[in-house]
Image (cartoon, rainbow, N blue to C red; front, side, top):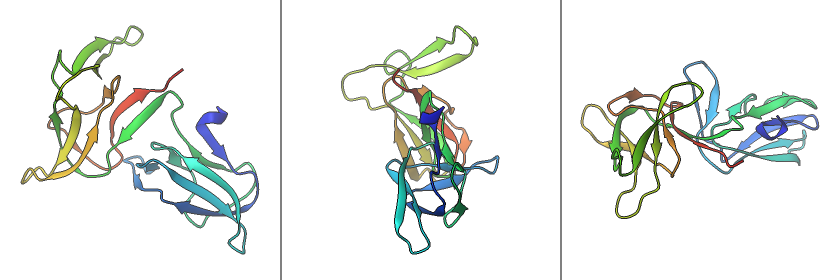
Length: 171
């Protein structure tokens, strides 16, 4: 559990450094970029603690929050690396071709059909493109690594915070 949560060690004030986040439909706040940091400073703005906050983390505190020792600062799914949408729009698959770059697998435990990005060679680069539904203008895109599980359907309208895909973490 420790590796999927960050707790404060001391009292201080929260500063978010290079963290991009969006609200989710269930009123949580989720981090959509990598390499952001949460810093705890004292009343004189001196750094006391610093943590890397992984993409897909749910922030449990806001910028400027006062924290005390053992407060939960952030938590994330320890089993998957998520790809989270940062924009509203319609989903379009690019270079996602059944049998070439994507295969469907049935989960043996749940029976759910999953779409998984396969190892592939050549000029195909599987990605989910988010477009403006009105004019087709590209708003964002997400490259999909091998073993990524697609979580959105082509044509689906998504909002910031939507889980686009997830890749199992290495054991």
